[in-house]
Amino acid sequence: MTTEPLDLDELVEHWTLLDGDHELVAGKRGTSRLVFTLMLKFYARYGRFPDSDGDLAGEAVEFVARQVHVPSEQMPGYEFAGRTVEYYRAQIRGHFGFRACTVEDAQALEAWLAENVAEADPRQEVVRDQMLDRCRKWRVEPPTKGRIERIVRAAVHGAQTALCERIVGRLSAETISRIEQLLAVDDDYEDDEARDVLALVKASPGNVSLDTTLTEIAKLEAVRAVGLPASLFSDVTPRVLEGWRQRAMVESPSHLREHPRALRVTLLAALLWAREREITDTLVDLLISTVHRIGAKADKKVTNELIGEFKRIANKETLLFKVAEASVSRPDDLVKEVVFPAVGGEQTLLDLVAEYKSSGPTYRRTVQTKLKASYSTTTAAGWSGCCKYSSSAPTTPRTGRCWTRSNWSPATPGAST
Image: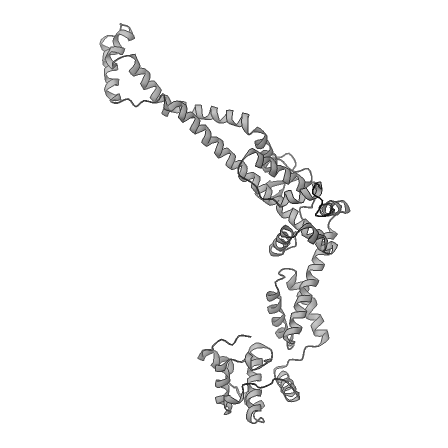
């Protein structure tokens, strides 16, 4: 409960006595009159009773005290407990048509929260707010703070347990066995292949290189070898799935083994399911970066080769005029005797040709040749692996579905999209 300062609009709207309120307050005297009125208006505002005077804003106490003509100085230290306070609570509940929360009400609240709230969002503050809202709709007075926390925790635990059991029920015995093999040995045993697979799946990608590409391909093959159904988490919200993924990422194998079987299998399945899509995205990024890197290297290599041949020729228009003039005036003579002397010698024409080749279509053709050579000699293996797992045309043998940037869409195996 907040005790932040209240403005006048808040006080007038929620702490002003109405005609029906005056009838209830009429029989009370002194401090009891002020306490009863504060409990009445607090319940109307928040749907529950204050646990102590610390729940009441000072502005609200002063505002109500002036209306009932009781000094506000009598409030500090008042104990909201005892037979008189219980009698006041019963009066107020009856006035608003509410009832006290029974054991049956608490069980019904827990079941409703588990099924309708906690499965989609297990955050306790969200579940608590929904519980208070449901109490108002059912016209049930919320229980004490400690009891509220117990109901909320039980609802979250029950929802997560039921959800994990449902997820595990969708997996075959063979798939569950593969998942649990990732945790089959002690942490002290360093050479275990299964635990190496789990560590490999959790590892982040390195810098753009052939080795990184091959490592990511190995990760993807290891994840897909488990055989998780594509629709395994179709009814799980992204928030819950991401929470499971993060939990499995940070917990050690020994900690994961301590969980109940359903939770343990669900956490690892969520990690593998999410990492499959993340690794596929990484492979696409590596493919794009590799293409850019090959192109940049080819450009640089060709530029370095041609820079020695490049020589800027000045007054090209004048040279062209001289060539044309000499050719027209002596069309029957040899080029060597007519054109070369007009432009200052054969070397000038050779420089003109070199300049054109270094900046025209020949340059691009040379770059493409170098690019193909770079691909065929240094990155063929990585490129083939990327294409295998990132192309939109191929389909996976297990699911028969095409991949498009983490989205799976039905497709006919072997058909292009």
